[in-house]
Length: 213
Image (tube, rainbow, N blue to C red; front, top):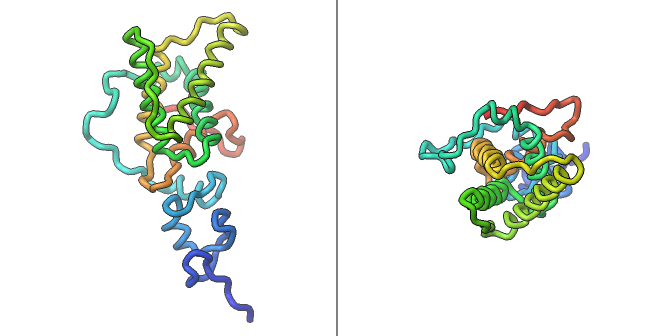
């Protein structure tokens, strides 16, 4: 009788599933405890996706939320659906193209973007940059996509640019959505996984969820 294959992480328990990170088979316990902790799991991993569907987000603080003075309601999201979906898609692309980008980096990028657009509302032009390099890269990529979007509206569709106040509201919405969908793991990307499911590239078998507050 052949010897059972042992988990490549603990070396004690029987391996039950393939892990692309360690390039070998691991046990279900190590998969559950090390997922997005010591392992930078790819979003395509079926076990990670299943975990994200089952995990409960960490509770949001009862303290006054950031940017509470910026109202975003369901009517706004519905009337600006194209802008919301564009921002979601651009944020996802910015994150997946930035090596090592985690949910924390996405939120940091959004915070910097929000501060930048808040400053624009006051009539000043000043870019607030995220402090860590990964978040800053996500911010730059998103800002470049937004600039291209505004240019396309003006040149191809003869439309006026989207107002700064509208962009600010979408950014605040995305930041609130992120705060409500964190799993608390050091390498967590549950929020990014959610955003991916909301993009037009989502498969027919798994329809994208509605945009809700």
